[in-house]
Length: 257
Length: 87
Image (cartoon, rainbow over all chains, first blue to last red; front, side, top):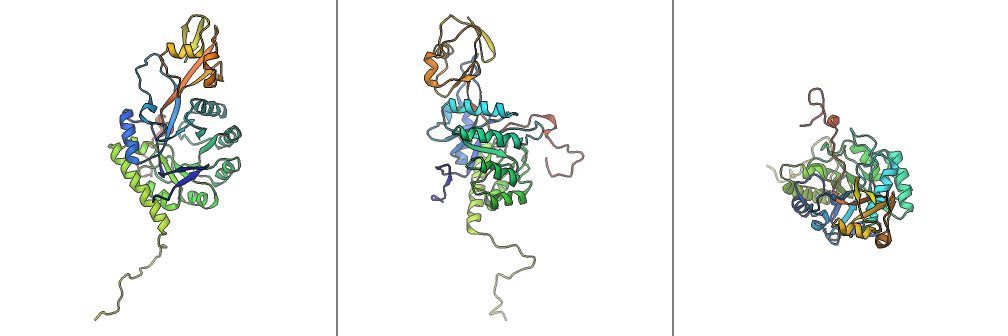
């Protein structure tokens, strides 16, 4: 699979498993999980520096921005203004022009505010950002995000952190058929089969955090996800057999007595 | 002069620059973003940005994050009356 690279906005990515860095016990565990996942795209959040306790470690001391693509997010932003502010701060902090754009609509579901998302995406694209939007499994919204200049779209599988897996496979399939940019399934997967299924449908990558960080053994789950992603991708490229209601014998009856 | 730094009040000597403040706080300038009175500064402007009494400074950096965690108590399905398959 060495030539099977994912390309977004002229950048090539080796791994189709992208991971978040939240909810781990410590940075050492975070790093081990990323390595076990084989991920080369890693999401981070932007927050105030702790100025009262300067002994706190820095995440990027563990995750070298030269080795990984750092993808800052706008998690926790509920308005267009906040999302723009955090995206601009992330760029000012100097790791890249990439942003995983989130405009959250509601704290119970953490579903995106898609109207706000499109508006924020449009502004950030004009400012030169490479905007990767976290969106609903809505094909119309996905197309609108492409129309305003997003080079990839990241529809959810299920609510963030829910572990419910792909709740609307038919919408996801419509998105995969109709949207002509890479589709990265973001949020909601629970286990390796969910990740494999997304890839079998034809997703270009899957981004996850809680499913790995929240597992009893995060390092082992990171490896399971890596294998799930690879198996799903290979199965997609190999082309599965069609489903049929009745049996088709796989053994010839010729030569039987 | 008194300024606000990351939400807390600080009394500092007059004439300090943003670079001076970061040094004082023992913060490395790489991979931080600084917002001075809601305006994001270019890193190249840190040494020449002089702080004034009443300024509000925000210093931000990267932390672990995927997406927001579902902290809301109703974020979890009620196991008593749901048809869904969950734990």
